[in-house]
Length: 140
Image 1 (cartoon, rainbow, N blue to C red):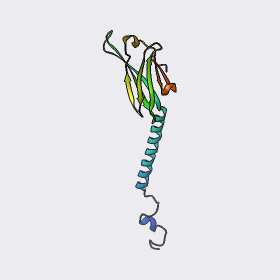
Image 2 (cartoon, helix red, strand yellow):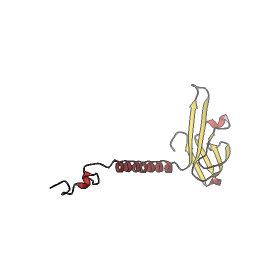
Image 3 (spheres, rainbow, N blue to C red):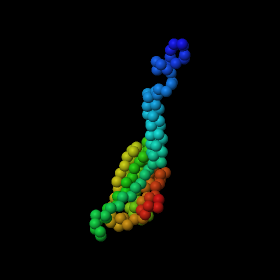
Image 4 (tube, one colour):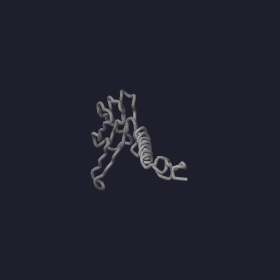
């Protein structure tokens, strides 16, 4: 009985799926799997933050001195948001920002020192169709 009499000739020349691993196939599977996981993560990350996003940033230079309050407004969508207005508190003056393009952002500070002690920021866009209220104490 010679070496050609049994069915091991495919494994002998590397054609079979014996104990030898196919590293190309494993690498391809790992790369494709990595892209699938990355795509799922990015979709969940960006879908949860889509639309008009408002963040309040507050900073003090030193104890009892200048206090800086800035509101960051971002448009995380593919559509342009029109007629964006910002109001600090219920009695604050309304500031017109105009139109915000896709994935645009703006930093807004209160106009007067009286508006610095606000409890919430009201952002209105698209003639009242979009209304976002962000509370200063972080409840919303």
